[in-house]
Each structure stands twice: as C-alpha cells, then as structure tokens.
Image (cartoon, rainbow, N blue to C red; front, side, top):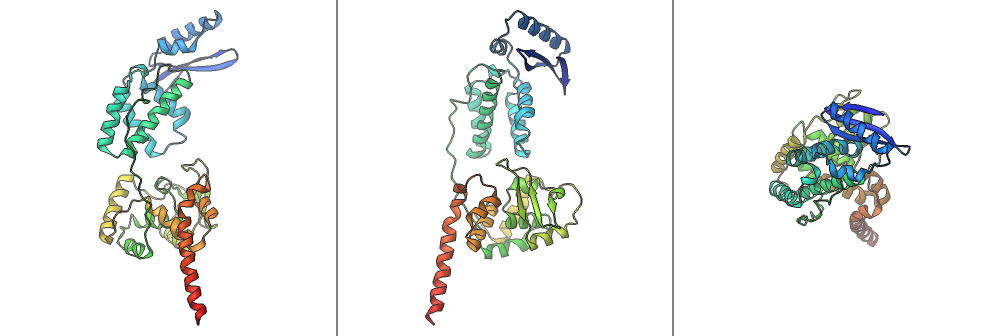
Length: 328
C-alpha cells in the first residue's frame, strides 16, 4: 500500500474491504501522497465512493489510455493497435474523459473516413467505444459513452478473390527479392499479414517442419506444416536462432506488392486475398474443411464454409472427368 511511479505517472495503491485498489493520479508525487491520504481517511470514515471520485476527478484521456493499454490492449495488439493508439492520442490526449463529446468523436470519425476507408474508420471508432466502456467498468469514468451516437458508414463487402495457378505463375517471377519470400509464405500457409510480418525465427522449426503461430486474431496458437517449397525459401534466407524473419514494414509491403501486381498484369487483388488463395486451392485439392479451419485459425467452421462451394465445384469436375473416362 502506498504510492509508486510508472513511466512519468504516479499511482496510489490501497485496500478497501480486503480488495486491492489502484488509482492513477498524474505527474505530481505530492498530489499522489495527498490523494492517498484522502482515500485512507474516506475508507476509515466509511465515506469511500469510487463513482463520486471518478466524477469529481476525471482522468485525462492520455492517462487512461496508458492504463487501458497495459491492462488489456497491449496483449492483444500488434502494430495496427499501436497505430490506432497514436491516432487517438493525437485527437483526444489532452482532454479529460468527460470533455470528449459525441461531436468531437464524430469529427474524428469523419476525418479518419476521408483519409482511409469506412472499415478502418469503424475499427478506430470500435476501439474508442471499448476504451470508454472499460473506463466505466473500472470506475474511472461515470458519464455516457460518447461513441454511441456517432453516425458511421456501412463497410463495402469485398468479394473473396483468389489467384488462379496461372496468376500465381505470373506473380512470383516478378516479385522483388525482398517480397518473394513473403508471398511464398502467404501462399503456402494462409497466414494473415500481421502474422507473417510478425513471424520470428524462434517460432520456425525446419527440422520438424512446423511454424508455430503464437499470436493470432482469434487469440489461439496454432501449428502450420511447412511445405517443401516454403522450407526451401526459408533455408535460402539463412535462418538464425532468433529475430524477425521478414524485415518489412507494412508500407514497404504495400509498395512492393502493388508493383509486382502491376508487372504481372493482375488487378483487383489485396494482400489478404493470398489467404483466400491458399484456402481455395487447399479445399479444391483436399475437400477437408475441418483441416482448413484449423490451418486458418477460424474460431468456427461457419467462417470456413465460404470455401465449401469450391470443393463441390472441384469434385463435380472430377466426376465429369471420371464419367468421360468410363465411356471408353
């Protein structure tokens, strides 16, 4: 029980009815001591009401988001989360939680929508909504959630696109030396972009032939077999005991991928479509949807069912070929 400092922020630590409480104060050590003394007096006099404290002393957004990051967001987030955090801090960091109004949030959303896409703007808004819900849940804020009345745009549904074998044969030769290993990894594993760029050598076992994906969108770890083609690519990269496999920022990946698509004459393809490409060719070759579910890391088979029609179409073609062969 007492006060402590983390980074540039002072916190107080005390117990109420046997339950430990931690409270963010700010940059002043003397204020932290004063607030702790006040809390202990309130507890002793049975006048401790955390909801009133949150209302009387609302936290700054920049202070609470650090608490939220450490307690919840950091363990779930990759580089994308850090980018959203930076953007939210730039917009709301200097304000207390109670001074962030629906109008300000709408302005932020509209600006983000103009800069990016509806999907990206909606992700920013969803994260801000969860931040305020967490502040209320943790008794750091007692007001309304300012994101609730924000008008947002409907996201455009992107029809899953996958590359044919002919398109793959055109794409791989025109990839830059830096991009080629990334594309091969995507096509042979179905890993998400963040999983690929976050892949580390210590999570690859070339002797056993397994990639260990420890951090995924679903939160569950999974193991992916390494195909001979991918193993050859990994070995050509001179594997090390540890460290990042692909030293490539997202911005550089986008640039290299766009150039490769242009050279190959391939249009209407996103990097995520390489995941669809893996899934489509896997199910057309095996018809095994449960196995595909495990490989993709889907939380339910329903998410994998979108590829079921490919399996049926492929089997229909095989049956027709079989029927033709039986005529002779």
